[in-house]
Amino acid sequence: MSCNPAIGGIAKGTVVREVDALGGIMGRATDRATIQFRMLNRSKGPAVWAPRAQCDRTLYKRAVRLLLERFTQLDLTQGTVTRLRVEGTRVHGIEMADGRRYAARAVVITAGTFLRGRIHMGTATVIPAGRSGDQPAVEVAQDIESLGLTVSRFKTGTPPRIDGRTVDWSKVERQDGDGTDYRFSFYERVELPRQVPCWITWAGEELKDIIRRHLQESALYGGAISSLGPRYCPSVEDKIVKFPDAKRHQVFLEPEGLDTHELYVNGLSTSLPIPVQLEFLQAVPGLERTRMTRPGYAIEYDYYPPTQLTPWLETKAIEHLFFAGQVNGTTGYEEAAGQGIVAGINCVRRIRDQEPVVFGRDDAYIGVLVDDLVTRGVDEPYRLFTSRSEFRLLLRQDNALRRLVALAERLGLLTAVELRLAEGRLKEEERLLEAARSTTITPGEATPLLARNGTELAEPERVARVVRRPGASLRALLEAAGVPVSCDDQAVASAEIELKYDGYLTREREAAARLAELASFALPAGLPYLDFKSLATEARQKLDRIRPTSLAQAARIPGVTPSDLHNLVVETARWRRRVA
Image (cartoon, rainbow, N blue to C red; front, side, top):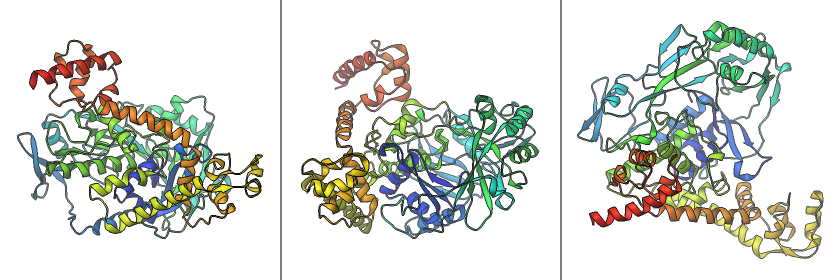
């Protein structure tokens, strides 16, 4: 966890559950390290509910290592890769700085911010690094560029850390977790660590004045960095410049772990010099006497515009070479994990000469993420949001197992024990749904439960209909009607959402079916788009560069119009007749 010690959040928490449903370990590691849990957006609809865990950084790292070492067929080694071994247009292995060579039938590059990484603290301090304390990967970056791939630069940043013993707790607001027994993993129920609070304070006019006075000393505004940074995780300098009318900016004090007093100062990411960082920290209420344990910094790094990739994250230029994570222009642990599982699944399928697996936009947020990357590309570090999906109600955090377990089983991603647990969970939900649809509740049984929300039941009705009323609880209604409910809370919550939003879900499924019809019209890899004169020039150029695999993907390319799509169908049919 090189930046924020937290996992999950808006859309991101759903990705963690999708990775878990497919057999990945991120959710399991998070459960072993969670020191505070909150379900964000509880006041809104379930389509945007977002589980988020504050983690102990040390426990998380230890959990990942423990879980990886359980895979007996996985070999772990450490070292620095300096070049790829490529013969013709296919990768065949890697070479290490210490002289070791590894043959490989596929290679996945997941280098984060290390490729020609440079850390900035002010305009004068520039340190070659992949992250603080680690050397950058320069030779392999040069080697990849020599293969003919397009390379660009992005930047991201991190805030200072402080000593929690120097905080005036009387001036900050305590924020406790939900107190719920939530787990990210569907397959395990480990004991959670001790729970702790986070804290909130506000950066006001004094901090803003300091930033304005020293703005030209910032690496970003002083000209040391020209790369674009993430719009949705801006530096404090960006906040002051772009939102000058905001009277104050929220700052979160987040614990780094249970065995340290160090706090992560979320909201004050910066590339200002170290003395200025300490000055503006001490301008924040509660931090007047704070000691800075580690300064914040900005980091520039190489990434590869992801339109150079197939929908299964293989490079179009080099066979069996896959990219995942920040090297594709994304930001965030969860986005990286989602890409990692796509690349991991598909590199194995490619070396076995099997059809690649492509996640649809209605299958998973992982599908939305990858499709956005390879179809639209990026012009700033990409972050996933629920608003990027057309099917938010279908792609909820609670139903990731139901959506993906059949695929996980078909691909052999789960153990026999995990499959039994998944089947048991889904059967619990089905029993609840069947009980709600077949059980009638009387006015006398229902009225005490509904009265608190100002409604009542005039005549006996099925529980499945009554639960749609505001504030109605599926568990309470079934138990009032004499049906005992022994399922865990998450199974009940998932079944309740299915019943409450049945009409909306039906409409979204119909829309997804229409999208599937477009997706079923395959576009052959060899189509000569530049020769299709009935398409607009912009459409021909973009289609030739991206090479979509279906009409649905072509429809999402900016600049391709409905008229272009109609003509593309005609041109594809003609081309197929010519080459038949």
